[in-house]
Length: 295
Image (cartoon, rainbow, N blue to C red; front, top):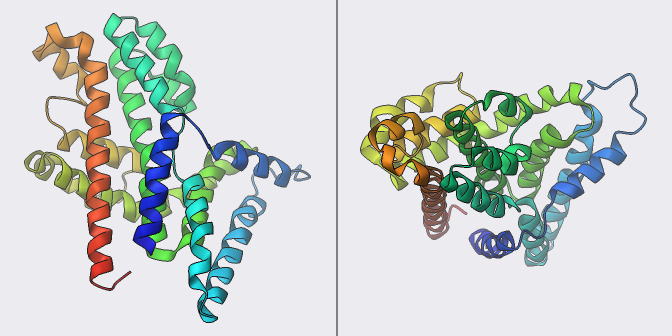
C-alpha cells in the first residue's frame, strides 16, 4: 500500500501543481509563528521549533502502530494520502518559470530576474549579477526545491512511514520559515543530515535517467564527497547527467551564440525532464521493493 498511497498522492499533487493549489508553506508559517511566541531572549533556541514538528510526528507514529496492532492498518491510509499531498509540491513554480523563459527569449533579463528573485534564497539574490549567474542560481534553487518537496518526502515515507516523512519535511520548513533567523542555521544543519542519503540516491538516479557516460566522468566522484552540500551535489550531478551544456550557460553562449535566446527555456525544460525521469526510476524501484516483499 505504500506504493499505492505514494502514487495516488504524487498524481494528485502534479494535478494541483498545474493550478498552484494546496500549498503547505502558509500552514507551516502559521504554525511556527504561533509556536514561537514568548521566546524573547532565546531566539537561537531550536527546541521549541523541533517540538512543533516532533510532537505531531510521534503522534502519527503512535497512531500508526496502534492501528497496526488492532488490525486496522488500512484505516490510516486515507490520512497518509492527504498528508502526502500536502507535504509534497512546489506550487507556483510552473508559472514563474514560464514567464522567466519568455522574458529570457525576448532578451529582457531584467524582467526575468524580477519574476524569479523572490523564489531565490537571500544569499543567491546578491550573487546573481549576470544572466549566467542568475540562471545557475535559479536552476540550483529549482533542483533543491523539487528534491526536498518530492524526493525527500518519498524517500523517508518509504523508509520510515508517514511520521518520518512529516518530520523530515517539517525540518525543511523550520529552516525556511522559522521566525527567528538565529535558529535557522541549526535547522539547516539538521536538514543537511536528513538530505544526505536521499540526495546521493537522487544523484545516482540522475546518471541512470540522464547521460550515464557523462555522469560517470564527473558526477560519480561527488557521491562520496562528504563536504558537499545538497545544492552543490545536485547541481554537479545534474550538470554531468545533462547534455547540450544545459547547465553551462557560458560554454553554450560561446558554442551556440545564435541560439542564446532559447537557452533559458531549453535548460529549464532539460532539468524538468531529468527530474521527471528520475522520479519514474524511483517509482520503479519502489515497485520492485514491493514485489520483493521489502515494503
